Length: 149
Image 1 (tube, one colour):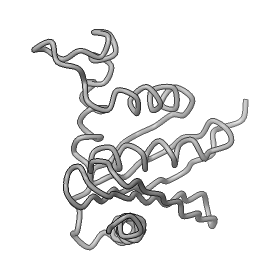
Image 2 (image 1 turned 180 degrees about the vertical axis):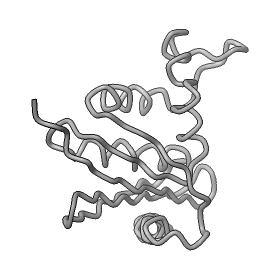
Image 3 (image 1 turned 135 degrees about the horizontal axis):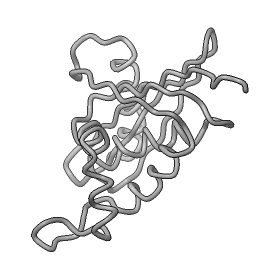
């Protein structure tokens, strides 16, 4: 049995206004190899961009991997590590007060990726000098600014 490749992923999202123009950035690192990904949307939210960064990075992996995702998004980090997303899924994407879970479309994209890969999440404080987080922020801001009027 072959062991899984160990990949480090760093992600960030940016948004001007909430909703407003947004962007996301991700760095994938495997050994000496590194790849940067980024994208954006004209009308989105910060949480959607944070989630899209994680989804896009995991989706870029061509085979199941052991992945450490580092994010500054407490929304993404807590939703997965505290199991909230699995509870929402069990309740058919409805929260306690009978309100729909925001970003259900993105959570539905993320869950199969979390099954495909062995994923561990780390949280770091944003804008706090973490080199990869700062670079992901730069990528996200570049993309966001492409959509600003």
